[in-house]
Length: 342
Image 1 (cartoon, rainbow, N blue to C red):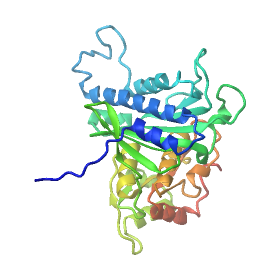
Image 2 (image 1 turned 135 degrees about the horizontal axis):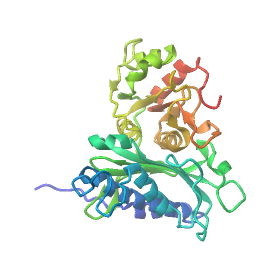
Image 3 (image 1 turned 135 degrees about the vertical axis):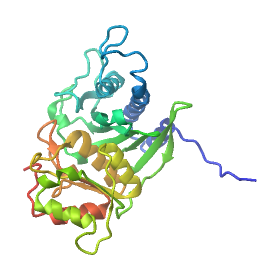
């Protein structure tokens, strides 16, 4: 007879409430933001799951039978998050990789003391070929005195984040987040529509197994970056070679490396001297997650979360993952002036 060890089923709501109890000063506003994000994630997961069926279900020439233009999934995800978050009274503003300026809370809704920055559907160009995509989010506390969020509130260094995380829409949908008390992962059980705690206290292995980098840019890298990649591959020096795994969907690559150990690299190059990834919507939130899991994130010279942003859509090079691998990047690239914050 097989004996199963009893395990308690913990929903994301219950987990958040229990975490909140550990902080008697908590107002519940941050918990409410996390609930709302979990709801938005369920709605986006549903859309992503249906994406492959869209053509079968009656869309013709980009119009459906009602004559409405079919929207791109990333635009849809952007709208889902805004609509899920703008009326709860917990936020005073938002910023999205899909929008040029601050997203204001509509007139008539109460403003709270937090702001949300997000990438609604990272890697959306991969949906057509069934590669996992994701949502990345970051929460900061308001620092200006006015009721509504201002640019100064959004342009805070990553170390000021109070919560951050991501959702990966893959073979299963997972939500991973931190509020500075470790990193916890929840898997969506579609049969009951609940996120259940599946990965408590995630710790990234100190030494990596995987290297995630787009080699097609090698011709545009400088010599320091080329030398670093050779070291990662075990070609120079006595290091164990990392296995190359690159999906091209940041959330998917980051998630694998977080669980298995590794480093994701998007170096600056001659075509993108400031790097390509967005500091506020991608690098900062994932840096907060990885540091809480015992890893590190750098632009090759500076800790990501110490960079002071100057613009909403600022780009940055990114080296993120297992601590020893990121430390090697800092050591080998320190002769290169930082492309960000310069």
